[in-house]
Picture 1 (cartoon, rainbow, N blue to C red):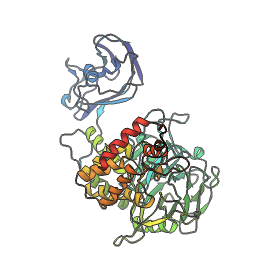
Picture 2 (cartoon, helix red, strand yellow):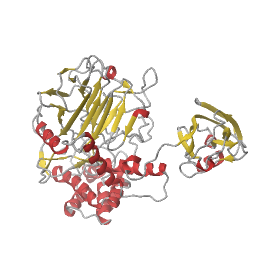
Picture 3 (spheres, rainbow, N blue to C red):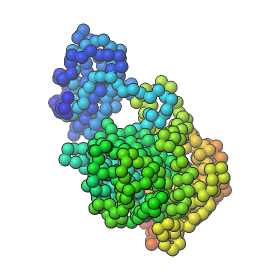
Picture 4 (cartoon, rainbow, N blue to C red):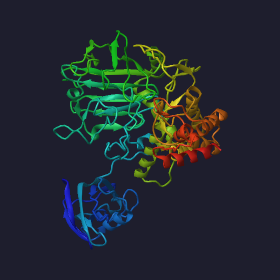
Amino acid sequence: MEGTRYSGTSGGRQEVGLPGAGGVVAAGDRLRYKIYPVLDAGLMYAATYAAVELVFADGTRFFGVDQYGKPADAAGQGAAKILYADQWNDVQVDLTAFAGKTVADVLLVVDAPGAGEFEGWIDDVEIGPAGVEPDGSDLAAYVDTRRGTNASHDFSRGNTLPITAWPNGFNFLTPVTNASTYRWPYEYHRANNADNRPELQGLTFSHQPSPWMGDRDQLTIMPVAAAEPLGDPAERAVAFSHDDEVARPDLYAVALANGVRAEIAPTDHGAIFRFTFPADAAGRHLVFDTIDENGAFSYDGTAVTGWVENGAETGRTRMFCYGTFSVAPIGFGEASGGRENARAASFDVPEVTLRMATSFIGVEQARHNLSLELGGSFEEIQAAANAAWNERLAVMRPEGATPPQLRTVYGNLYRLNLYPNSHFENAGTVDEPSYVYASPVLPVEGLATDVSTNAVVKPGKMYVNSGFWDTYRTAWPAYAFFYPALTAELIDGFVQQYRDGGWIARWSSPGYADCMTGTSSDVSFADAYLKGVELVDPLATYDAGLRNATVAPEATRGRAEGRGDRVLRRVCEHGHRGERVVVARGVSERLRAGVDGVAVV
């Protein structure tokens, strides 16, 4: 059934027939439809009192319950407040109890209380077999990484990326429909082509904490099956469908409309890519690109190497890459069109595997990261990522949960475990690791080169990408509850920012982003300590919080720039002279400072 508008005046049960009658229900069948209730001016939510209901040939009616256990009839859906207004809602109703019965009528029913106007849309009504659900042996199978991606600057339904990655990994891997932005690079639902289909412009190494903070150091790889290695993102773009994607934490795969299949499995500092080209492809190329001209790529006959440095600037330093192909390219050079720094490797075989690792330290460290993490086959590397994710997800086994509820639980745990991100690298071996990091909170020294960073490289582990104002009441208590040992390491990774730069970032992105109010790492870390997390360095953790509460941060370019308490700085600057202290967002700043200060006490 095509999208159909429903409208009218509420006040009693109303129903209208829909196509789809005459079928016999089989065991395992379900009723599924999409509904978009429009929010009425009087905020009565009348359009949410709507549902698709079935009448069987024997005269019985079926309402049942939806995937969340709510009554699936029109009045029940409205009373349960389960449908979002001005949004598309997916409703699923199990029909197994009525197996063998013939559907005589499919009805759209509105049964809203009171009097008022209602309007909405119904689409994709279907009665048929439900998909095969995971059996619980692989918890990562419950996760769809695309949850929350149907969002934009104007309206957030999550504002997430469909990230394939290692838990708390150094990099993210994501498909992109816009390979020239560091804000919202994957928008399946917007900017479609003339056939109203989204187009893939690349597969990207990402480090995005949120679209509001912005991505940084994006490196994009795109398979091109044209005669020329098209470099322009819009020209090389190829249509695809959600139906042809596999979007899991340990695997992203997509079959493109031109017959190319692309697959990614992640490691901590890199990924393995597998590209399969159709037999009749006019050409077989891999294009290496970034969002602007700030990057360079080359091939020395053994490996493709390069660097990128772009996107959000706070604490950003150059990222380097080192990659090897399963077969030597027949050519490597400038891409056809697009950015001047885009490069392409060309092949004469139908399948190419690329192993690529990254580093914030240099090309040689990227090569070392590849040797540590990317020695196995595609299947072995995916299996390792799968095992890592199952270990994280196994902290919760909800009893009696429905498959949709399990998808919600494990989807949320997946998202929790993406952040914060490791910022350190192993300069030693697997058996004798030696961890180092390019500090995002210290001033750089000199200029970066094509092979080496200008960031100060220090021993130890640092973690980044956490907005403590956003997470101190949500993510951080969950870390402490589910993963106390890991939480101790995460906390010390942020205390490392204090050891380096004198402060823990208010919003680590990855450096001292001047964003949000308060110093809520104080609450996050104190709460973890009181919950029994055995801190690596309790005194340094306390000292970092004490400094936030008692020391005014020095202003740089007129701002505290992501360090310490803004209010305290303003009081120290003006209050001692008896001047009036004016602080933007003063109430919020003062409330946050009070709560954070209590945490230190």
